[in-house]
Image (cartoon, rainbow, N blue to C red; front, side, top):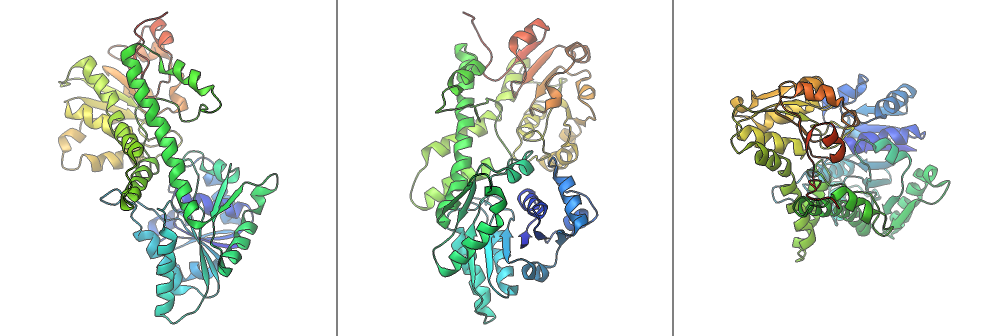
Length: 457
């Protein structure tokens, strides 16, 4: 099938590459010439395991093309995926300007029937706005072409997006019941047929329910994280071990183990903005989602927990103190610094007068860019950040180590060497990578999240 993908970010590029891998003829459209130049020269503008090989293989075969030519992109695909960004607006609602602009371009250039698929994460009712934008352009040019707007939300985890796309646990598609909707249903069924050979993975529903499903899923996962973080903070006070608690409740099949890990807050491009957007949608309809407001508040507070632990240990004045930070991206296997907890910790330490040495296995260029923006206008503070090429380089002469991202490379360090490089063997573990008993045996002063057990039975 001929497919056009509008947008080459995480969702668009993964979707386009994986659909090409399945034998489709895919045209990826983006208005960012720099990004298209990178892709056409064999590069990948994002870090996503396995994606580079798929892109290279399908570019070589001719099944995957990249361009800024809007007219050519609209002409190419009978199915047009809109996979552009939906950043939070000033009030926290999703900014749909890029989605609407993509829809207008489709309406401006389309000839013949098109299935227009909302792949971006969008609020309930966005399909109506997309349809209105397309129709307005058609009316302006006196065209009577038919189209159908479909909701097909993505469920891709950064760092595992290729695997998630190629082996989905579910495919959600929302179509309407019009004649055009039935035509779209048939085309979407054909497109996703390769994923349903072993068993049916597609959940068909109305458009608004499909839009709602994506937000509901992310809100539920974010809720589990914030719930565990609140329990972890209490565990530190009552003398319980949150890891033992996690095992105890996760064994209940009604609860399960996923997304029950306590830590220093979630970040990235999805959970923060999607929780906010769903909450703002509720307010627009006169509803108050108390739980989601609490989820957001807990997460914002949790990003300060690691800094508070360090200040409690070393005092509020950190002049002359130096700290190592391992992990900068919001999660492992990505270079994404959006809403990353590391940015909050670095701000806390620098504001208290400390200096920091930071390392991330992948995110160093993106971290430098993000932190440059964070400290724009404060060159003195930025000068107290040292970007290190290795974990050990970051440790040298540091008063303590703080771990913010749970990269596998950090799970089994040489503790003897670690102790020799630090001024004192002190670790603040924002992801609970290590066991307190093991750290005690190794002679390390250890501060986890919800693991400061006061008594042992």
